[in-house]
Image 1 (cartoon, rainbow, N blue to C red):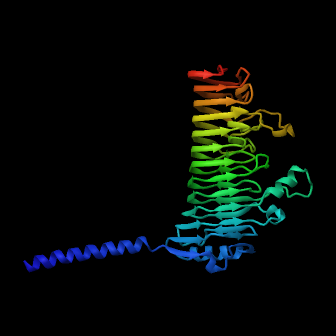
Image 2 (cartoon, rainbow, N blue to C red):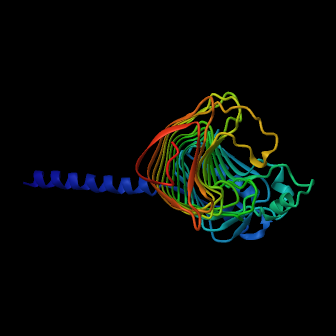
Image 3 (cartoon, rainbow, N blue to C red):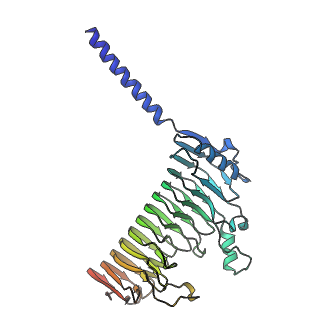
Length: 400
């Protein structure tokens, strides 16, 4: 009996030790505080070097690592690159309780491509916080037509050639140009993000995705002066759900056909979206020039339009401002695009416009249960070189 008791005790003791060991493993995340590296939360003293140093420290560890940014305002005056080349850790979390601010002098970042750039990283998460890029003065310079403005401006947050990326609860304010760019990445999840910029802010796309695969965007609110989400060449398996857009230029695939050799866009779903007073709703756009690009396997599902100028549009003669238009024919093939349960109001009489390529007509377009109205006007649809079918009730009357 004593032997049995000792055996049972031994097993229980081993189980307890195993549980304690597992608890230690779970809690073994290293925590680095930016304040310990010299960051100042007063919004006056530049903390650029402190953030670069804390990144270096986090990368030097093979453990899971959390970089804490306590409450306060942190001036990050210069463009910063966080590289993953020498990172041992594949699990680094920025937990931001404060606000990261750029210089109020737009010339400091105006010549840079990006303000905060992550290149070749794996397993990086950004949780909470706000980015204030102070872009209003650059917009004003551009809108005034001044020749002294930088040609471009900085994207606030960029991920390039990275994988397993998570952005949750971040707010992006007043970017100089694009707010968030996902370029050449795989397995990206963006959730609960808020983007805020003026409706007349130039080239301030909310989220831009290109050359990337398996990207998901959930529960996001975007107010900006350009596309709320822009989808570039080489985007595959993109899911967008529960997004509110406006002001802005809508959700756009393109512009495409910038180059002759161009990767296609495929397997894109937009679901449960609301557009408020936007220039466009659901748009596919390509320049009228030769290209081997394509768009296929796109679903627009359960969408509400509220006073949207162009609720549904395919524009294969895209040429903003009608300046230096190529005046050729788009080589981009658009096929298998579904519009299902689209309802609301158009600000113009043309609620559906399919202006497709003469040499590569749109095919497999499907309109299913679409109801769009326009105050004091009869809504219409316009089609050129578009083929497809309607299912259920479609208003305006289909021109397919």
